[in-house]
Length: 451
Ligand code: SAH
Ligand code: SF4
Ligand code: F3S
Figure 1: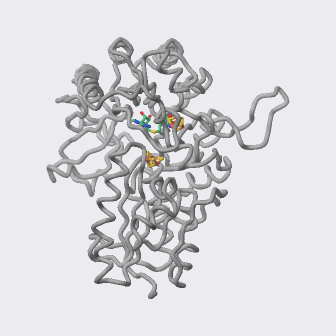
Figure 2: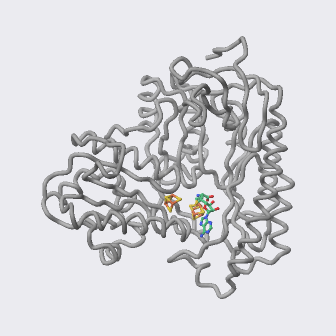
Figure 3: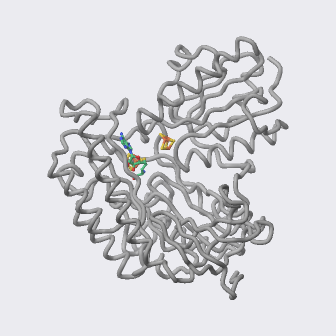
């Protein structure tokens, strides 16, 4: 077939997928393809897919169905499915959508170039065999000019009984501290101000790297990595996600308190507030241990923002057990909480269990927890009223061109009057005049550009 010339990427799912899409776009740019604004203008369509819950997976099929039809009239259209649905379904995806040219798992993102060459040579390609992720040699095409994702560890070695990620993302693979620092240095020199270090279980960073110190301590922990990259010039803010409570150490908490560029915002999913459910989920910690981590964070950083993920309606969850989750939400007071009703996933133990709950119980619990989350977030927002917050300006407010938007150190989205050409990439002091549960508004104060 003729080599494609114009591409369009649709990304579903988590930050990991967004980062992979930016790298795949970088590869396509390097191959001389042009990015276009609308899928209809493209002759290569890439779907980077997510399968964390059933509705995420179904969304992919409805998109694919539409584009597969297009192929009947445009035989030169190249259709690529990447990401987690590709890994989960593999060859079966070709049976379901025979029009596909390439099905590639997340571990192949950096190899998109070679795979496309095979497609152009006339093959229908499925790349889902577990493989070592090659070190990133491409320049990602990043969506933001201010804030950038930096992968530090791929994959996940946990076995949470509900979760499809280990089977689609493979085993943990840490990048070397040198490669990570080099990427961050480049970002700093290109004018990026903020980085978010990424891993499904970022505290596991370094477990697979060689090197034990004489005292027997691992040399490459995530905490060590933070110290190692902290002084990169130009980078003002360092964020990271996702943290697993099992591995969240006091040493890491102290480091975050001590290192000025590390934002005092922690995303630590707890999933459930009930110990028996946590055990059934195989999470490896208790409610008490989780609350201890929160206490320790607040001891060192009293104003820290906290966010988390929680699942309601896990198999066998009783009303009392669900209420313990509500109680934990009440007790901690999260700034933000991502909630989801349990969704049975292929190749996961919990999906096989007989004690599944009905859709209506799950729906009811989801509504109740979301109601509480809104109340708590509104309470947490109150503390910002009248305060001066440092906001890193990233973009124009899409709903009001006279305003720009950015985030506080604690990750609250904040709007303020201003001109993006002047303010983009600056950290400005903003007096907060209006608070909503999940966002703030304010005005630049006179001590305007603090960085
Ligand atoms: N590695 C992270 C989470 C990755 S998945 C961690 O360990 O916390 C993101 C979130 O999706 C999870 O935190 C969980 O809350 C949710 N999730 C994962 N599998 C799910 C399922 N089968 N049903 C509902 N929610 C799920
Ligand atoms: Fe999934 Fe658990 Fe791994 Fe997170 S730690 S990605 S929830 S298996
Ligand atoms: Fe989805 Fe895969 Fe991320 S399943 S949440 S895109 S790791």
